[in-house]
Structures are given as structure tokens and as C-alpha cells.
Image (cartoon, rainbow, N blue to C red):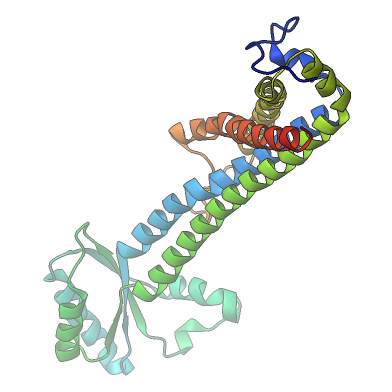
Length: 298
């Protein structure tokens, strides 16, 4: 018979967690699930943190440069080029300009037309690379001036290229945070199942505890402490495995498209929040499952 208003601690058990067997399928299953989910959370967290840096890098790279294309008959091409260079020289916000030569144009066209393209025999437009100052320049005003003084010149400030890349990086960040939230939900669900299984497997122990006067809160605390520790240790192992995997990944060069993916600087400390957060989720899930099962079996 269950005692009413029992003592705070059951006699004979200084540590409530000591009443839960330390071995069994629920024990290793909880630790294994926590480690696997923490490992995945490291990658999702890395993707979320680096996507903002990636978007900023892409945006800065494209926003600090522009390209000007001059299409004119061969007899007028050189004159228009000089006129455009003079316009750019007197345009506030333009740091420097550079006319691309035939070799550079050949390299640009090589992926589509092959290395043997006779660039010198083609009527290709003249390309001018523009480097902007940090504040940039007035693209609208420059286009109006070019339309008047150099009708064959077309300015491309890379806006149409920059916007999709930034949007893609923002979508990647949102997807990464969704993955982190989904991992947290899965951890809670699996721990709830494991806790319910452990409670069912220890039904005889729970009956004995109730006979000696243990309250449901004491029993739930015993299972909660044991499972919280397992979740924390498993998540810690998975987190350090994830960090180790990132540490041995090859480093992309500065010109790499995905340069900056991963943890950088103090960002390496961010995944250390995963074990305590996982333990908090484990504590809440186990406590809820234990109280529900105990009230049902009352």
C-alpha cells in the first residue's frame, strides 16, 4: 500500500538515481541516440552559422565590383573605350578600372566554347572591370551618363547575380535551423520512448518502492537523473566527434566557392551548448514520460 505524504527520500537510497539499473537496452539506446543526434546537430549548427557569413561574403564580393560592356563597330570601339574610361575616371565611387584583354576573354569563354576559340577573329564586345570604393557609386546616374556619351556601353553592377545568391544563403540558414529544431524534437521523442520502456521494464522495482512509501515524484526523479546523465554523456561524445570531423576536413582555398563553411574562430565553442541543451531536453522528456506512466499505473 502506498504511504501518504512519505518522506522526502526513500529510506536506503541516498541517491534516487541508484534505484534505476545502470545497464540494459534503454541505457545504451539513450546514449547512442543522443550521440548520433548531437553529431548531426553539429553539422546543422555549422551550416546555420556559416550561411550568414557565406551570404555576406558573396554579397561583398559582388557588390564591390561591376562590369561594363562596350558593343560598337571595330572602327569606333577604341574611341568609345577611351570615352568610357574618361567617364569612369570622373565618376565618384569608382576606385579603379581595367580593360580585359583577349587572353582574359578567351579564358572566360573557354568553358563553353573550348580552348581553341579564335577570339581575335570574333567581334566580341570590350569588357571593362570596375572596382568600387566601399561606398559604391551611383549606378543610375552612371547609366544615364553612358547613354548620352557612350551609347554602346552597358553597365552590369551584378545586382541580378547578388540577390539570388544572398537569398539562397538565407534559405540555407533557415533550413539549417529547421534541422536543429527537428533534431531536438527527435531527441525528445526517442528519449520519451526509452524512458517509457525503462519504466515498464522496472515495474517490479516501482511497486516495491511504492510499498516502502516512495512517492511518485521521488521515483520520477530517479529515472530523470539517470536518463539526463546518459543523454548528456552521449551528446558530449557526439558533439566532440562532430567537431573532430570538421577539424579533419580539407580547408578550401580563398577562391573556393564554399570557403567559410564550418566553424571559425570563437565559433568552435558554439557546439559546446549542444550537450547541456540535450540534457535539458532529456530531463524534460523523461520527467513528463515518468509522471504520465506513474499516474496511469496508480
